[in-house]
Image (cartoon, rainbow, N blue to C red; front, side):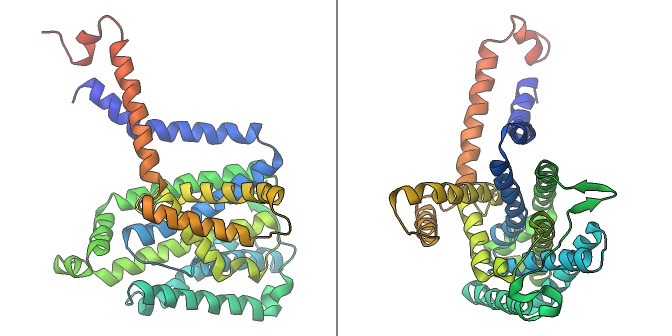
Length: 351
């Protein structure tokens, strides 16, 4: 492969990632406190939806109960740090262990179901966990909420400002996406794709369907739990109403908007959803009086239907095509305006 081909592949695969990371580093230093808090929320949602993208887009399993795992992580960290004074990392690990265990116990029976039945089963699971959060008042505080959650502290370094927390969240999100991408590009990812295509066909070639479904379900639960733990440390107060079935539906909407068949789709959907939601809060009152959150629900319902009809693969593939075209134009321009001795260096020795 000659140098120009290598350069083109490099630009397509890594150029966008480097530009994105550079933008992430620059943005917090020019953003105000409100925008910084919004970007932190985007990062937290992005961690959840990245795990959900693997489950939905690659294993083909729909979950309407991921707000429960999000809440398990949040309450685990709240109790471990707020009640027992343990380090923040202990709270995260306890949340991961508890969420993973619950995911195994729930996943073994429910993942035998298909499509709508699976969605309803996970929805029921989410409602049960929400009821536990609400009724176990001695532990969770019930509907009054859990107060006094300390800032996240890692080996003596306190993430006690929005700027510090921003870099923590987005670093974890990028690592989580790259880790997920490695899984999807591996033998496990090929097995998940075969399951998504056809359970019968996957089983005929020796794929252990239930095992792979369960593994990706547990992994997605772990992602949600980690995000929930960090969310609890960020807001320092949690309430069961933050982890309702509507929150699970919101995660699902983000994945559909971004694109469930692309590992970057969850993050893209989180960015679009959160930014549009904040924009609607500012714009809608200018035209309609006494309109609350119902308008946002209507708007995102219409947006969801439109994307399912006109862009069923979500926004990620479209954005990918745009980037590849821009990268291609850049490479062509470089080839035309390159150095005079380009012919002797690009393709090897001059014949």
